[in-house]
Amino acid sequence: MSTKKKTKKTKIGQHESGNKTAYAFLAPYLILFLTFIIIPTVIAIGLSFTNFNTIEMPSFKGFLNYVNLLTRDDIFMEYVLPNTILYALIVGPGGYILSFLLAWALAQLPKVPRTILALIFYSPSMTSGVAMTVLWKIIFSGDQTGYLNSWLMRLGIITEPVIWLIDARYLLPIVIVVALWSSMGVGFLAMLAGILNADESLYEAAAIDGVKNRFQEMIYITIPTMKPQMLFGAVMAIVGTFQNGLISVQLAGINPTPGYAAQLIVNHIEDYGFIRYEMGYAAAVSVVLLGIVYFFSTVSKKLFQEKN
Amino acid sequence: MAGYKGSNINPQKFERGQLKIIIAILPLALFMLLPIIFIICHAFKPMDELFAFPPKFFVSRPTLDNFTKLMKASQTSGIPLSRYVFNSILVTIAVVGGSILLSTMSGFALSKLKFKGKFAIMEVNNMALMFVPVAVMIPRYLTINVLGLTDTYLAHVLPLLAMPVSLFLVKQFIDQVPDALIEAAYMDGAGDLRVYFKIIIPLIKPAIATSAILAFQQVWINVESSNLYVSSEGFKTLAFYMNSLASANNTVAGQGVAAAAGLIMFIPNFLLFIVLQKSMMNTMAHSGIK
Figure 1 (cartoon, chains in turn purple, green):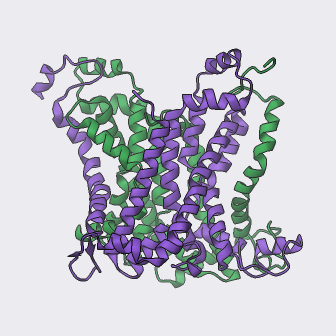
Figure 2 (figure 1 turned 90 degrees about the vertical axis):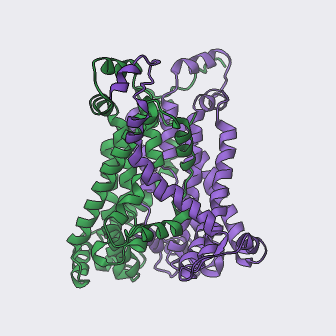
Figure 3 (figure 1 turned 135 degrees about the vertical axis):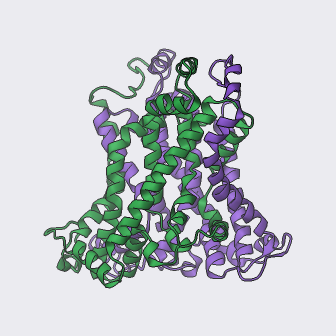
């Protein structure tokens, strides 16, 4: 404590209390952060080089799991990877652009309608879980008592009920729609707040300088002034997209999904990890997933990060 | 060019120009809202309306049948519903309280204190914003096993306490607290702990509210811990029970119960967000990654 007096002649804002108290403040967070985020990630990387079935000790296999993933795993190459790419491209950038456009539109409304609409858009992101999936199952129920079937038949669009959640043609699109439905989460709120916080004089100045319409204004003023929020929103969108992949198994009711129609990379991990207990292989797939997320986040950073 | 005055961000009152926007987003708002209205209607439908053909979207004679059935279902399963409710409340309070404490303490240190390794820690935490929990389901399960946390309340709580997003938002918010204020307190002889409790905490209430919402949303609907880390029924949570009820009741009669279960899980989340949304928007204004 006596050292504190000596170091009080600090630069403004950075109080030097010696490292000790700062570490004491950080310690609880850091310990749990290490235990449940860093160490599991390191273990995943470690296990990915082994053959681990949870009963015997893992044995070292080098890059065998990765080689098998790329050359031997037909299901991964034929279904999981294309499904994941299609799903991620639509739900990721699609959901992100949609969140931004909605935030932008809402920012131009007065407080009360804006808050109500924001609540409507944000609500679905609070509903995840199997209980909500059951409701989707009722809507997409495969016989004529299903809501969607009943509506479409009454409108004369289809004559026979469609088995939405079993038919390989429809399962993935349905998963994408449900994922988009629940994609307006924290990132959406961040972007809305970012637009609302913009300096109004910038907009006035831009109008004087010849910005002609809302679109130009969005490109030249809105987006550049809220790049940091755009980046936060992008990272949240990427993480949310992959985390949400679990709904395809929830909707189909089984893992693997019928005909692997909506098998996504997270379902593949669950399939190998908790159904087949090939944990080494599942870990390799996890590492690939983390790599994909890291790659896309880096791309977003390149797009939005301000250079110092 | 002539009439364009720049769009009016955050207007004070309603103007006719705003109608265009409302009309444009209304269909989408309806699409977002329909499933929520549907779950509410379905939860209150009596048996004959659940079986109605052609199926009806809205409820015409609402009853509480589905909710009473849901209560009765737990009586037959051996574990009373109150046990799951108790477990969930306990775990939720622990996670929300704990993660607020952890995020604000470490946010304070990272924002206002000077020490070695600060930027490295911030950098790692920013990387962890990209963390996808499902990717490490297996190692997490192994870690919890090794630590001997299986079948304890701690298995529900500890994995969720360190939330990188929450720390990030809280730290950004604390950055807005004027340094002069803190300097003055140190001059008056206050220690770090005192500054944390008397200056930081009262000034960052919006960030605390946001942290609370984010933690609540994670823990309240979390079924992973009940599925993987806890095998004895008595330690499982309401979310798990509701989900198992919902997935077990795949019959038409069970759909009403499933909807009631879904609604019960949704309502607390929804109410909390309504109460705290102002604080949350306030925090989100500082959410940018620079």
